[in-house]
Amino acid sequence: MFEVTPWRPLRELSNLRREMDDLWGNLTGEKEFLPMKGEWMPAVDVSETKDSLIVKAEIPGMESKDIDVSLCGDLLTIKGEKKQKTEEKKENYHRIETHYGAFSRTIRVPVSVNSEKIKASYDNGVLKITLPKKEEVKAKQIEIK
Image (cartoon, rainbow, N blue to C red; front, side):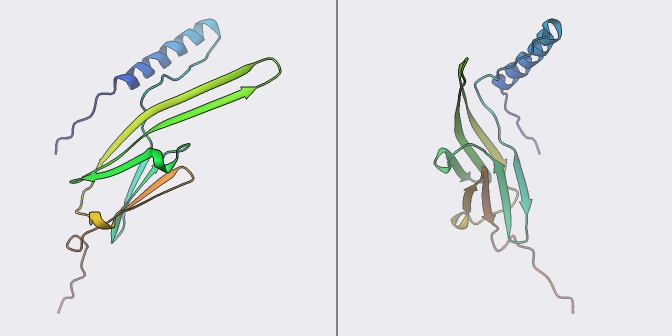
């Protein structure tokens, strides 16, 4: 089966910048890398039980209303936009950092699922999607006589 891998120019630029910062840090002794604004991809685990597929995605620091989950044919898509602002005030300085990035992760679902009974929950930064298998896909025990 042939699968197309998307080109992610922002990630490639980020990797190039990290390498240049490492090189500069080795020359000057100063090493500070500020990540580029852009896309990132959450880690995803997919497991299968007798009755369903379970997809878990690590998406910390977000609210469930900022995450979209959709199933189109056999493609499950998780997407959203992460926005995080950090502020630190001390006697000598005031620092504000804002990190953001949109993500989209698509997973091919290897079996037919009952789209009417899909459930999704988000707790402590982990999105859990349960995709129940259709009855005809479930393994059946056949008695030998």
